[in-house]
Image 1 (cartoon, one colour):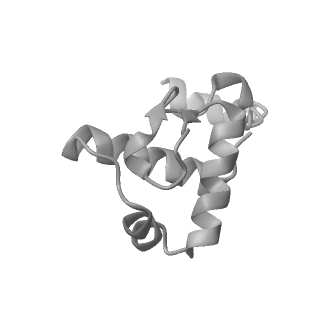
Image 2: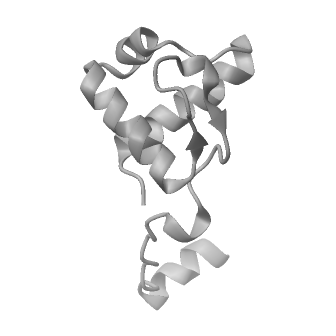
Length: 95
């Protein structure tokens, strides 16, 4: 499961490539995420190890290949379903 920051970097890469037809530079990623270069590099390394992106040449972000643009369904945190409330509430919502 990806952290919020790793998911943010993945979505920035995906959307930036879709709009501008190129990947953002490392400097642009630091500006857009508000984090320093080591944090961005760590997030990119996790994305590579998890199989979301392929990045052979670590010197240039133009060589990134996105394998999956979204987090996998099985890895998303599940929101517990709320129990059904009082039966009296059903009167106001059903009629």
